[in-house]
Length: 122
Length: 106
Image 1 (cartoon, rainbow over the protein chains, first blue to last red):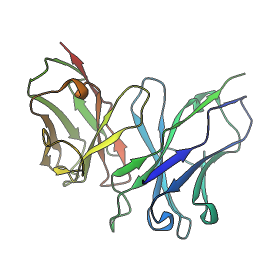
Image 2: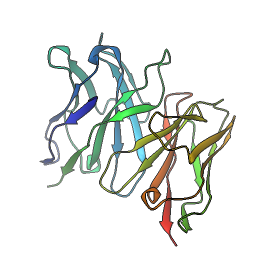
Image 3: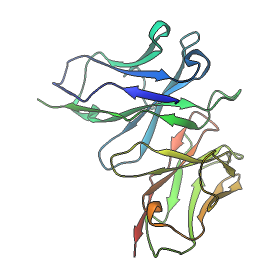
């Protein structure tokens, strides 16, 4: 079964750092782009960007300039989303998702992780 | 940034109804559009890509149409499992989602 499994919920204080994970299985992890999507409480999804596990090439959304960093560990088929200094406004559910297998940089997401709830509160 | 605007925001319908949701792009996106269904507490599920291509495993009562700046998602004969929030997503230039359309039971 093709799936993405994300790490568990996190509760952090403003200013703290955080790294959440997304482990792929059931497919060739290095040949599909992985995207990250933010969904704030009661709002629609927001596309944060994508990373190609094959060579770690990234495309960040202009709406999230310098706020987050994507990375991968190919040896364990896992993608990461990290923050160096969290803010209360980072409180949201974060999804990883597999981009469809096409030649385009940007495309739809066909497989989604279950989401990781991140709460930032003092 | 390409902005995506969905209408209506909320839609009340009966089981068996034909339902249409509209998504408008702030500039032409050709057919670079997807539709998703999201149920409470779950991740979005891909229904339609390239404006009108049905994702594998999605029931044929779902269909998409449009190109350029105006797109529609149609559900023929609404089923109890279809009540959810639906989002469009453009992927012509980076990617942005619409604000969602909630389909409620009437």
